[in-house]
Image (cartoon, rainbow, N blue to C red; front, side):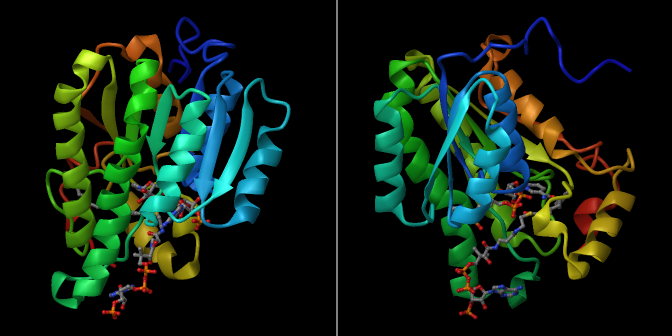
Amino acid sequence: MTEPTNPEVLRDGLFGGARALVTGAGTGIGRAISLRLCALGMSVTGVARREAPLADTAELAAGLPGGFDFRTCNVRDTDAIEAIVAEAGEGGLDLLVNNAGGQFFAPATGISQKGWNSVIDLNLNAVFAVTKAAYPYLKARKGAVVSISLSGVDRGGMGLAHSIAARAGVLGMTRTLALEWAKDGIRLNCIGPGTVVTSGLADEAARQLLDNLVAATPMGEPTPPEDVAELVAFLASSAGRLMTGQLIQIDGAAHLGAGLHMLSA
Ligand SMILES: CCCCCCCCCCC/C=C/C(=O)SCCNC(=O)CCNC(=O)[C@H](O)C(C)(C)COP(=O)(O)OP(=O)(O)OC[C@H]1O[C@@H](n2cnc3c(N)ncnc32)[C@H](O)[C@@H]1OP(=O)(O)O
Ligand SMILES: NC(=O)C1=CN([C@@H]2O[C@H](COP(=O)(O)OP(=O)(O)OC[C@H]3O[C@@H](n4cnc5c(N)ncnc54)[C@H](OP(=O)(O)O)[C@@H]3O)[C@@H](O)[C@H]2O)C=CC1
């Protein structure tokens, strides 16, 4: 097997002088993305609601070539997140990673209108607000946007009507903005991880679901957050310079398998 990192492309210092905004940087995939970008020299501003996990990410990033600072904010608070994007953007913005997100598993008949709206707000409306607010800054530096989605967005998934609808919306937005903003040199892509073992799936109640999801993944293993981070770095690098409007599923063939989309909590 080859190493996951191609030294020709993702080499030390690659992102020196570049700046990123990563939502949901306090834990899990967002933390892994932030640390990898910092290791490659990027200055990262992380956003999440809780200060303590963000401070832990900052501690882990200490000593890496890039830098990590953070702001606490609920991405569903449009005014607050737009102000943070503007503040970060004034210093220059090369990469936006829309990672904050999540949902609960429930059959559609068990999703109230409020529950639907909550998940759409978090996983679609907030992504639009952040991406639109970042536009002038990304345009100034021909930057990139990577939105973390879900494996199987184009297939559906039991118990995830709200989340799949939101992520499919983000994919449609991504493809449309890839067209509209191509003239500005801005590229936008989505990554669809399969099952990633993070704190969001760590409690006992989620354990059985996790085991079932992994068992239904053809390659039989979860996706490490570091693999997602590596793909983000690739898409942000010059190696991805002609890649835009794509959904890249990094899921051990979960989206092709017979069973994952049929599982529910
Ligand atoms: C090939 C196809 C494959 C398909 C599947 C592949 C999938 C791969 C594996 C996917 C695994 C995904 C993992 C992750 O996403 S990890 C991240 C983990 N963390 C989370 O997901 C947490 C996210 N949750 C939240 O942020 C919030 O809970 C949420 C935004 C969803 C809601 O926040 P809000 O503050 O608005 O919440 P409220 O408490 O006010 O509730 C709002 C309404 O929602 C209803 N609700 C909440 N939970 C449930 C539930 N479990 N069931 C039903 N309804 C729920 C709640 O009752 C409120 O509505 P009402 O007032 O009308 O009752
Ligand atoms: N884990 C998995 O199996 C998979 C996850 N995904 C997606 O990947 C993304 C990251 O997931 P993962 O790392 O597992 O999740 P985690 O729950 O570990 O991390 C989520 C991060 O987002 C932050 N966050 C959540 N809601 C908000 C909000 N409203 N405003 C600001 N920040 C917020 C959290 O911090 P705080 O709580 O402090 O706000 C935390 O930093 C999500 O979009 C998820 O749906 C996709 C496929 C599979």
